[in-house]
Each structure stands twice: as structure tokens, then as C-alpha cells.
Length: 248
Ligand code: OAD
Image (cartoon, rainbow, N blue to C red):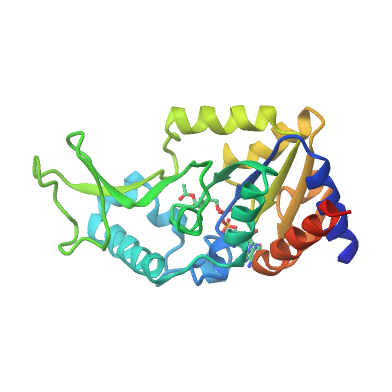
């Protein structure tokens, strides 16, 4: 394992334009459940059965109950050492951009500045009937919540299965991937497109792929360096190694 960490640190130091792609695994150690696998279940439902427009149309109350549960978990959670390690890499001038699939706000709370949230923001509500959108700091009191402007149904400000990522976020993420000569891929299964294709873009023009995950993922076969373990343990170690190599 130490060899993989050293390889990762060398790639980071040699890079001219390092970016990162994060998924639910980076927030797991903050107590926010990942989506896939047995730990991802809420009551008896799989996220794929709840995070769709069809599910919301069928049963907005159920979908909002799930989101309220997740909003409460997120509000009660704190960024973990993996989030802070990415902030440190940004402040060292090494990490140029962060692309996250997470709808929580832990990267922002940790202090990451240059980032795009591909799958939206769970602390935003948007109206399904008019263009009302607002930030929230607690789960809606009445479920399902209604739009204060038009009385329409409010929905969470996230991207659901079958929906498109907002074009500006998508364009920015892929433009960053085109520029990158190295990418840190952290805590994602890599199976949800188009986010899962971002490491391939970097690899496709000769960039390096460093992966940090507790298990192998859909990305592992293209990884130049696979660091197996918890992001909150691995990333701070990599940052320490990078800093010690910078001093050499
Ligand atoms: P997944 O739940 O699919 O995958 C989480 C990944 O994190 C898995 O590969 C785990 O092995 C890994 N993991 C778990 N704990 C970890 C830890 N402590 N350190 C490092 N890795 C760890 O989550 P995502 O890949 O983020 O989309 O899922 C992608 C998208 O699917 C989500 O953004 C969401 C979901 O449906 C939308 O909501 C649109």
C-alpha cells in the first residue's frame, strides 16, 4: 500500500493540471450512507427506486420523506479528513478543480473553492410549476412542500435518474477533464454516466488516473495507481507525502 501512496504522490507533484472526481464514498466517513450496496438502503427502497421523476410523481410524500432523512443526516454531519485533504491540495496550488457527484455541502463547508456539483444540491428546493428556487437550511416542515409563489409542488434541487445534468455544470466538468493531466477519483462506483466517463477523458489524452476506494470499482481497470482504503485515511497520508516531497 505504501508504494501506491508514493506513486500517487509523485503523480500529483509532477502534474500540471490535477483535478478530482468525488462520489458518495468520500462522505461515508462523515456518516452519510453511500448509494449502492447493502448500506445504501433506506427502509426497503433502493435509491434508484426513489431518485426518479416517476417515483416523485407517483408518491411525492415518500420521496420527500427520504430526502428529509438525508437532509437531516447531512446537516448533522461534518466534513472528514478526506474533504480537508482536498482543500489542502487546492491551497497548495496542486488541485486545480474538483468535480463532485455529491449533493451534500461537505466540500464547501470544508473550504473547497473551485468545484462543480454535477448532480445538484440537496439544500435547494425548486418548483415543478414555476421558476422558483431557494436554498433551505432544514427539511421542509410540511411534506410534500408547496411553492410559496405559485402553490406548485416543490422538489429537491438534485438531478434524478433519467434527467440531464445542467448543461453549464456538465460543460465545465468535461472542459476541466480535457485540460487535466491527472485525476484523483475518490469514493465513486463510476457506474453513473456521464460522471463515470470523466476519468476516461483524462486517460484518453494520456493523463494519469489515481483511484482511492475501499473496493475496486468500474474505474479501477484504467487506474494507473489504486490506493485501496478509506478516503479519510488515505488522502491525508498522500497530502503529507506530497508535502514532504515538496521539501526535497
Ligand atoms: P455509490 O454508492 O455508487 O458508490 C460509492 C463508492 O464509494 C463505492 O465504490 C464504495 O466502494 C466507495 N466507498 C465507500 N466508503 C468509502 C470510503 N470510506 N472511502 C473511499 N471509498 C469508499 O456512489 P456514487 O458513485 O457517488 O446520483 O454514485 C453516483 C451517483 O449515483 C450519485 O451521485 C447519485 C447516485 O444515484 C444522483 O443522485 C443522480
